[in-house]
Amino acid sequence: MKKFFTFMMVLAVASILNVQAQVLQRERVAMPVVNNLHRASITPGANQGWWGYADNDSEMTGLGVNGADTYHCAIFIPGDHTVAGGKTIQAVRFGLVAPNASNTKVWIASQLPSSIDATNCLQVVDVPAADLGKVNIDVALTSPYTIPAEGVYVGYSFTITQVQYQADAYPIIVTGDDQANTLLLRTDNSVPSWSDLNGNGFGKLFLQVLLEGQFADNLVTPSDFGNVYAKIGESATVDVTLKNNGFTPVSSIDYTITSDGVISDAIRVELASPIAFASKGVVSISIPAEAAQSIKEKTLTITKVNGNANEASEKDAKFTLYSLTKIINRNVVIEQFTGTGCGWCPRGHAGMGKLRTTFGDRFIGIALHQYSQQSYDAMYIAKNSYAPVGLTGAPSCRLDRGEVIDPYYGSAYDICDDFNAEMAIPAMADIDVRGYYNEEFTQVEATANITSLFDEKYHLEFVLTADGLQGTGTGWNQANYYAQYTQAEIGDENLNQFGAGGSMGTNPISNFVFNDVAIASSYFMNSNLVSDLEMTAGASTSVNYTLSLPSYTKLKDALQKDQLFVVALLVDQNGRIVNAAKAQAADAASVSNVRSANTSVAARYTLDGRQISAPQHGINIVKMSDGTVKKVMVK
Image (cartoon, rainbow, N blue to C red; front, side, top):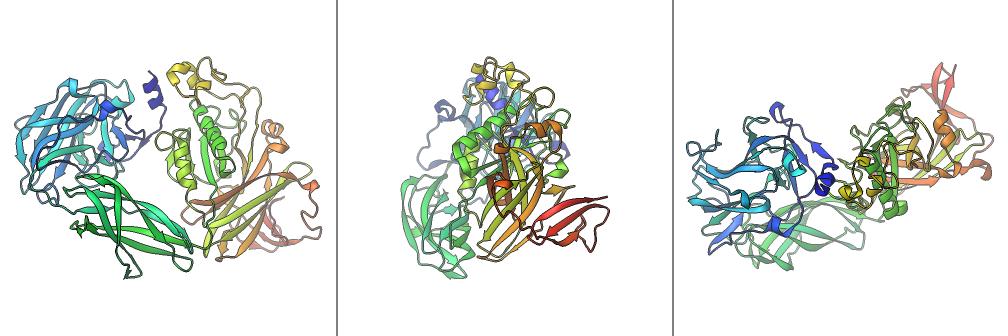
C-alpha cells in the first residue's frame, strides 16, 4: 500500500495525440531502482551486443491508458540502420513491472500486426509470468533473425487485467526524447489503430535487441547541451553526453569548437570511465568565455574516437555560450495553484515549506488560491487580478513559469531537484525591490531597481504576498484527503503530518497557517498596469507602483504588518521569469522622504493604454512625476 499510495499522489501529465489516443498519459515518476528490477539474464557472446533506441542510462517513466486493456508496443528497425542494419537478432529485452500484467509475448513482424499470432508475425515467443516484474526482461527468439533490407518490427504485447497499482495504470516503460520509429503503439480497446507516437512527448519505448554480426567502431554522437554561462576571463565546465554506437568501448575523444565559422584546434580528453557499446556516458569539457560580453551559437564536433576518425553520421552538438561581465545569482519563483477546497493541496503546502527551509532567500513562493471561490477560500485571488500563468489542476506549479509540475514531487521525485536546476542558471538582469505600507494600511508603495546585462525588453510585475494567515470557520479550513490514510501508508516524513494520527491528520484541517499567499498584484482586469521596460545593457532603471491591499474583511483582518511582503518579477518576451526579488514591507511613516510633497500628475491613461488629458469616468491609470503609478476611480 505504501508504494501504491506514494505513486498515486504524483501528478500524471496528459498529452493530447489524436482522437483515438487522447487517453494516453505519461507518468512522471521514474522507475524504482531495485537490483532485481534491472538484472539481465542473457550475456552477449562473441560479436554480440545489446542495442536499442532507448538505453538504461536515462530516466524511465510509465505510459498507459489507466485502465484494463491489452497493449501492443513496437519499434521499427530499418534495414540500412547504421548500427543494426544487416545484423542478426538473437533476443529481445524489454521491461514490465506492472503486477497485474499477463499473457505477455515478444514478437517480430514484417508489418505491424493486427493480431499477435503466427499468421501475422514472423515469430511469437511466450514470456513466462515468472520472468515479469523487471525492467530488463531478456527473451531469446525461437531462431535468430537477420534484419532484411526492408527492415523489421520488434515488439511485445501484454494484458492488464485490472488497475490496482500505478504501474498497472502506466505499464509501458518509456525513456528519453521522441524519435520516429521508436514508439509504435495500439491497444485492443482504447487505441485500436497503430500509431507512431513521435512528437507527442512520450519518449522512446524501452526495448532493445541482442544483435550479432560485424560491428563498426568509432561511432560517437554527442547531445546538444543548451546554454553555457561563463564570466569573461574565465571558463565554464560542462558535462556533454555521448552515445557510443561503436563496438569498442570509448576511452578518449578529440573535439573542436566552431564559432563564427572558425574551427578551434582539437583537444583530447581521456574519459574517467569507458563508454560501452550502445551506451551513454558523460565527458567534462572546459568552455572559455569570449573576450567581450556576447551571446554566440557554437558547435562542438567529436572528431576522433580512441585516436581514430569519428565515423558517426551525427558528430555535432549545438550550444549557446553566454559570455558575461557578471554572474548574477537567480532567485527562483514558484507559483502554485492551490485552494482550501483542494484535498490534495496539503502536499503543495509541504512542498513550498520544504523549498523555503532548503533555499532560504533564493526561494520566492507565490501561492495562488484560485481553486475555490471566495465564499469557500478567504485567500481567493481572482484570475483576472493575476498574470495568466496557465495553471488549472491543483496542486500544480511552475518554476519561473516553466513547465507545469507537481509542487512536492516536481518533475520526478523531489521539487528541490527542479529548483536546484533552475537556480543554477544565472540571471541576465539584477533586480531588487522595497515596499512601504501607508498609515491606513490600505496601500503598499513598491519600488523595483533593475540593471540588465543586455539590451532587452522586459515585463515587470509586482505582487503582494502574506505569511502567517489564519482564521476560523468557512474560508479557512483546508481540505485534506491524506487524513484517510495512516502515516505508515503515506510513508513520507513531510506528508505524514497530514495522515491519520498526525498533527494535522483531520479533514478538513482547522487553524491551518498559510504562507506565501498572493493577495494582490499589478494586474487589473487581465492587464498588467506596469509599463514594459526597454533596457539598455549595463544601465539601471527604477520603477514605482502602488498596490492596493485587499478589502475583503476575512482576509484583511488576518493580515499582519510584519508578515507582508512585496515581490517584483522580471519577465522576458517568452514569458519566463528571468529574475525576481522579495522584501518585507515596511511602515512608510518610519521612513523619511518616501515621496516628495510636491509630486504632481505627469500623465493619465485609460486601461487600454490611451493617454488622456483630463480625468475620465471609470478607472484611470495615473503616473506621478516621481514615477509612481496609481489606479484611480473617477466617478
